[in-house]
Length: 345
Image (cartoon, rainbow, N blue to C red):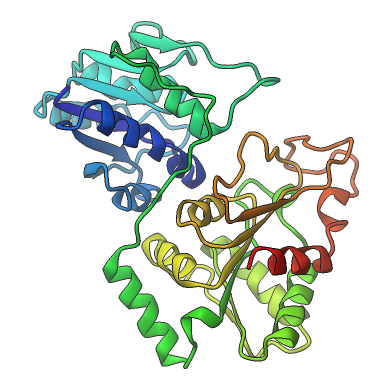
């Protein structure tokens, strides 16, 4: 194959976990050109992948058909004469563009009513026995006829690069406030899914105090989206000494967030897209899990330590705690996380 198109998933974490698929495609077809069609909010992930030739951004909104835009994109993509397209989301509408673009091989998992749109398909695994997402995407390589099948049970680690421009931007901002890169602990208090993935802000505040008590030169930078800014302000308000805590939530591009995570001393996060970025950059990290399953979406890095309480009610995969107590997160103490940070250094 000379030209391959990837239809990207819509979540940052899923985008990170698709990188091993790209790496394996490049191994199988070393001369191939791999392009990615992605929404603007996940496009920076693919710009950080060595294997990607071109990222084509399109503002395809969640749960909207946008028929006119899809037809327009298909006409443009048809000119590129792709040999194959890997459709990573399971939705019907995600399979429309490669079909309209007359791409001969359209590869993906069987999803909602897309028979014929996907012409090389795998069955979705059961929810009871789901592989990690990186392996789930990687398995799509085996749909193509090539000499050696990929072992999709073997652990795989996504890998990302840091943009030099983004690194300079972050370095300049740190220098402007006299912060040394290696004194920075990055806290990511948000999780787009909801509160059942968010460690309490008072626990983040206490952890910050413990780190600064041990390391007087330590600085805490709170990182996330605009919607996480309020969480950051809560952490600062609850800290007894917040002079060395800065709230950058909503104040960086995703490229800059990738750079900051890669430059810092350690990352402490919930199960989120930024957690997966930290794993792909191989930074020391502690990942806090509540309602989600670390068997399915773990941080894929030897430098990551997962904290999960294995409660009988977890993982429930609910956006609100069905029992109303949120013990899966509240009972993870700041001291538990503080000790885990010591263990990863």
